[in-house]
Length: 310
Ligand SMILES: [Zn+2]
Image 1 (cartoon, helix red, strand yellow):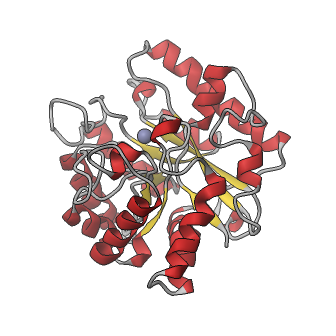
Image 2 (image 1 turned 90 degrees about the vertical axis):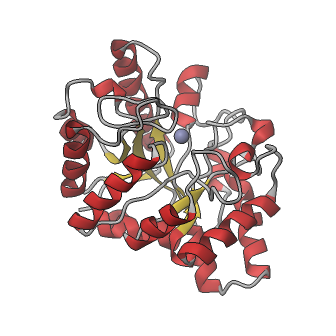
C-alpha cells in the first residue's frame, strides 16, 4: 500500500547534526523511508527554523534546508512533487513544505520565490504569534492579519497547500473561511483529536468537521503528548485517534503526519516510517474496508494534493 506522511522535521535534523539522509540516528532516513512500503511512499519534508533566532539567521537556515532538500532528493533519486502530474507514481517521492513564515518578515511577496524553489505547502505560524497570524502558543488570539489573509489567498491561487497545524483556533476558522471562498481544501498536516488529548495543537470536533467540509485532511501525529494527556502512547492510541476522526469527520479526512525528527524518540508512538505498516495492518484487522485503509494510508492526502496543485 502506498503511504503518505505529511510532516517530518528531518531537514532540520540534518542541518543541526550536519549529517545526511543515510544517518540512522534520524527517524526518517533513507533505509526506513525506502522500506516503509513495497508500493512506495511520499514524505513531506518541512523546513522549520525556530522563530526565536534573528531573522537573518532564520533566512540563512531556511535556504540551507531548501538546498539540503534538493540535494537529498537528487542524491537518492527521490521524485519531487511539484504538480498534479507527479502524483500517483508509486515511487519514493517528496514534497517541500514550510512550517512558519516568520523569516519572511515584511516580504509577503517572498511566497513566489519559495514556490519557484519547490515549496508546495505552507503554514503561517509555528507556535508563537507572528506578523501573519496567531500561533497556538501565542498571546493575542487575534486570528489572521491583513498580510496573513493575503498570503493564504495567494497560496490558494498559486497551487500551494495551506496547513493549519500550529495556528490558534481563531486563525483556523479564518483560514476555513478563505478556503470556502476559494473552494479549496486545507489541511492540518500533523494534528490529532483534541477530544482524546487536550493539547491545543490538536483539533476539536467542530474543527475536524470544518476541515472535512473543505475536503481536507488531518495527519495523525505520533508524538505521545499529542496522543494522550499523560504522554504515554503506542499503536492503540494512534488507532483511537484515527477512529475518532473517522467517526467525527469521516474516513476520507484522516491520514498520517507523523512529526518524525520533530519529537523525542522516546516519546514517539512508533519509531519511524518503517512501522507505519503496523498501523495499516491493525486498521485492516478492525472494521475498515481495504479502500478506507488505502485512503487513510495515502489516498486522502493524494486527493487533496490533486485538488490543490497546478
Ligand atoms: Zn510542527
